[in-house]
Length: 288
Length: 171
Image (cartoon, rainbow over all chains, first blue to last red; front, side, top):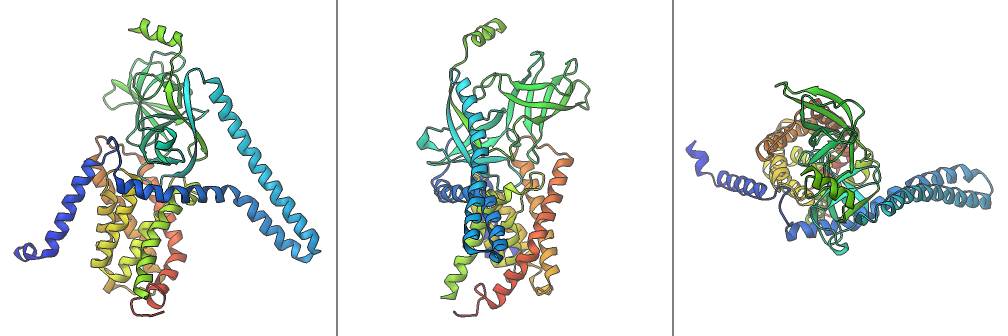
């Protein structure tokens, strides 16, 4: 025992562990700004993640062009080149069509909501690199006016909130992240309120603190309650897939399937400002 | 000269791993689970170079992950440092030429790393929900890591003995 205490490696390791634990406690998700070192690392990754995402979008066209090129090595050279070009063009056009349909949906949604929200649109360039936290990296940052704690949505529903921001990119903590909680209400009945939490290890959500007398059932749609300062009211969160009782029997727990498919999400809208409609203000005043 | 090339490659590997994990592999995830390429490279380094160097390397690789993630800086660093230390202890006791050593090493590393992250999460997070999904996610990650280990270990071992990652060879 004394021999270990005399070893300098022991004290070095111990001091590193203690410093790490102190830094860990100071760098939770709730801190206001990230450090300069983190900003430098993020800004190094942002253009590369954008580039790799771009390559991945065009991958289908390239693989088919490659296969066609192999096949056409047996035919006349001019037809080979023409077929290559047409296939590549066709694949690119299909990709553009899919992108146009997605963007049209996003634009149509943004235009329909333009009286209520001021949006910043962004493209997803990277996703969680680990399995413990759920987040996206988007290609808009401080320069575009993105700030911490802004709500992020898609035409399908709620995505999450801005966690950390650097100059040209930002991290969106998804609602499926284990550190995210959203005040929620049932869309139809408006009487059941609860907290929707992410489980962190999958694309599932959990709604807790539901009173035992609630009429909640499978298939109900859950929306944001508007009781927090981050998420505006009425944004779809998910659909109830299962309802069970808590061990105490006083409360219910529901599992939700998110409205948004986070694995396929390519574009998001960041809510810069929210102007609640007059009827919503009246409803809130009546409830008070 | 080889020393600097070696250091450059050792820095580049985790850096590229994080880039690939967050872009390509996140698209081809299994039920939302991505492989931990950084852990794979740390495990390889530990098996070949021993516990002292591996602990430092694992700690720095984890720290890079923490800086990219921006949350609880130090958690991945400590987890990977500990994993590398334990795995590095095996260095003198295994036949590194055998690919099964790499596979079992990565399996062990994934389990140790996951357990370390889980224990630290219990301490720093106010609430931690545990369910079957967490266990299934770990199993998927083990499978994904092992599948990637097979081609990567052969390359890494040969490079460490005969190639750019070796200590002795000059280019």
